[in-house]
Length: 351
Image 1 (tube, rainbow, N blue to C red):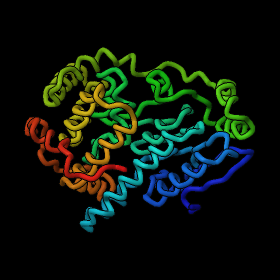
Image 2 (cartoon, helix red, strand yellow):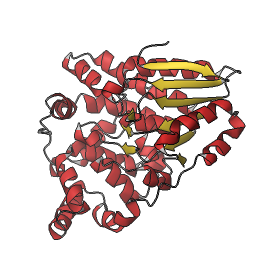
Image 3 (tube, rainbow, N blue to C red):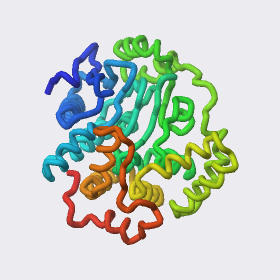
């Protein structure tokens, strides 16, 4: 299903997917992810397709994630079926990529966030550049780090996983390579050349092509702040983490400690409690399919809470950044309240 915002082609037996909505940082609409899934499923069974490349039309953003403005419109219209379809379409698209029998290579230049980040992590190969900014910023809008983040962040060192999931801060290619979130790094200026080389190679030559274009991304940032992260993100109490960040911010004003404190103070408390629970559940989840199944049901519960609509209003609609969260702090959230969101027997399955 060809459409303006996502384009498909075949070159030398290679399936090409180009996300083409640069004016919205390639935010993914329901129509876009539905078309993507349909095409991936068709190529999965096509013996003439060797491998698949997913890229973006602009180096500014691979994808800033799912189009939450679309989800917000469904909430304002009180359309539960449309909202469920929004999340189901996004997660099924990611699942189709993950389960594809052909190698799928993401050329992840620029912003790689939310559902866009999740899509890359379902690919067999992820190539980033010096312009890549990888983040799961759902805490700012009252949702939660979804699209399989419980797996791809959950396998990171615990303090790092909590830092990324609770603050929503961006990391670059060097850190992604270190954490296994990227397989290769190429100069942004060389991405088009890499794409051309991938179009001329067979599936058995992909690794050699990526190695030929490999670029040293320099030193990772996270190891330098790891001791601080281990000080803050310890234990299972969000309020205590916030208190430790506040104490360290007073001792070290103008440092990463202050930045972490500001993020934890600003982001949705329920989002943070839900992500903490997901990290705690990492060993129970069998992999991406299980994670996406859980994400779908969690999304249905979280999206209808007042926080999601309030967060989207404050960040994306009014751009006032003055969300009034309910409850207003992690201290007001009990384990029972979080348990309720994870009790999903009455909710529909993903597939």
